[in-house]
Length: 335
Image 1 (tube, rainbow, N blue to C red):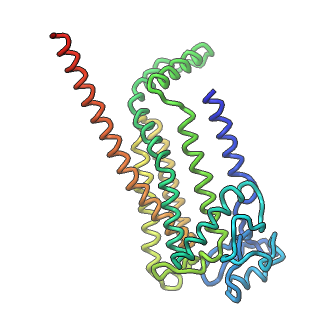
Image 2: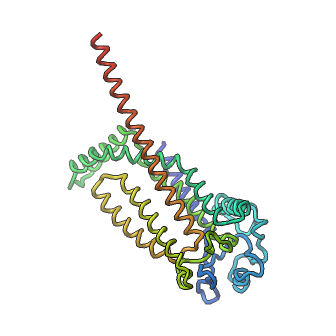
Image 3: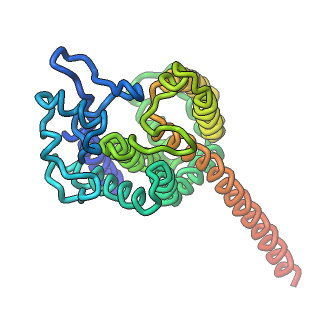
């Protein structure tokens, strides 16, 4: 029953992620991507609120109004925006994107800085997901303990593809999972719960023009490192380095949760692919998203360190309890 419910939830989350209302790139009448010449940022078509009037950004949207689903003049101002604003509809928008965009704006106006808003809400999301992260790492640690038994089953049925062998292998594998109280579906569920929230937050950032009109640490939040470097603003080298470095450390830590050689090879290949991809993508990321990426990845490294300490402490407590129980039993026998 639990497995069936898990599969239903996975399908629901996948459908929610793919529902209409995802971020669309603004294209001109010639189907070319429209960028902000001041920042190099690729612009979003389905923004939720107006850019500041008389700004370069507002003019660009006015010039490309024929390509918009909703005219820029018909959108609420960012200060007036609420989750019930009817600029765009859809389950994805209503449940996640609009509420997150509203929070980004409220916190941004509260601190008078949207860079701080992006960072604070990014950290808040990480904190909300902390119990799931703890559960995921606990499960990963238990899976490490059961790997030798899984390896023995793999070796036992190596080269056998008949139905009888496959069924026996499946049953023995499930018995190992039951022995260690591991639900194979739960690992997928943990990831799939986090994925929609992550993409919704990025979508909300991209759909709020006010964010990209602000600054943090002297850097324009809409500026891409590529554009900044081309204008001689070499501080963006630090931004690229931090994106790649925090991603590397975060991924490296997550790879320590498996001892399976075959899985490690696959993860290493994926790891190298992701690092190269993110290194290239970091040149075109708006600064607001770069700050979000750096801070949340840095927090994830710190979070994983704390969780590891908690799990190690739990293991020490369990071992101590076992020793006490053994001594107590021996003492009772002697009596």
